[in-house]
Amino acid sequence: MNIDGVTTGIVLDHIKAGKSMEIYNLLRLYNLSCSVAIIQNAKSKKYGKKDIIKIDENFEVDLDVLGFADPNITVNIVKNGKLEKKSHLSLPKELNGVIKCKNPRCITSIEQEIVHKFKLVDEKNGIYRCVYCDTLHAAK
Image (spheres, rainbow, N blue to C red):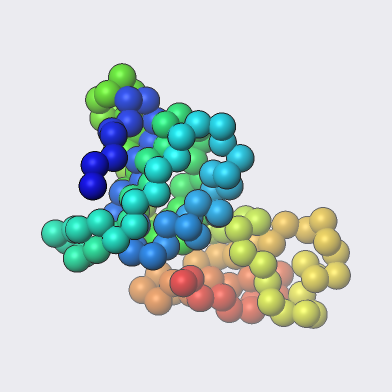
């Protein structure tokens, strides 16, 4: 199968196989008016299988959301058919408004306007801690 390259836009590569729709929803790509190609289960020398998302437009990508969802993603920015910038992600040290605290006694459950904030406390296992109530949350 052949999917055209991106002339100007973003290519999200090395997405864990099966996670592309989660990334699509987290980034709200459904709101874009440009072409978005989702390639699932593509062959990968490094991972065996991977997903790829090609977006035919440049926009501000939330790297924290991507890093949290899958820290192995590579973000490629393409302009005029050439790779302009390549970014390798990692788990973000802090998450604001990305995940919600599950503790019903947390202040974020009572005060709806408070932004949910988490700090990375265990990078190896992807464990975050709510800054308000210390509840733990594991990255997927």
